[in-house]
Image (cartoon, rainbow, N blue to C red):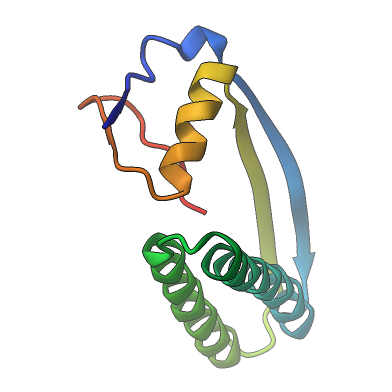
Length: 129
């Protein structure tokens, strides 16, 4: 079993944020922008699941769970934007990522591919997919 203590290696992590969307849209355009992002992520996870199951025969429970979360969010957004009328909608979307050092990358890869892993209590967990 692998143990991460992210607090010990924080100085070796490079963090970066990209402002992807920062605009006000009419409802129909906002729905199109948001659903396009969600649908692309859903397609990406579906491809990951297929690849992991076919080529590597690995457990995809986490990815399947994340897929269901995103689909539920997509349905809620469709209902919300359909019921809000034609009011302008401000859409903000940033992507935050961390570049991990090679030791952490190796262990994180094992975590993502199904090898059991624990984290030290009080340390930040890896982001969900």
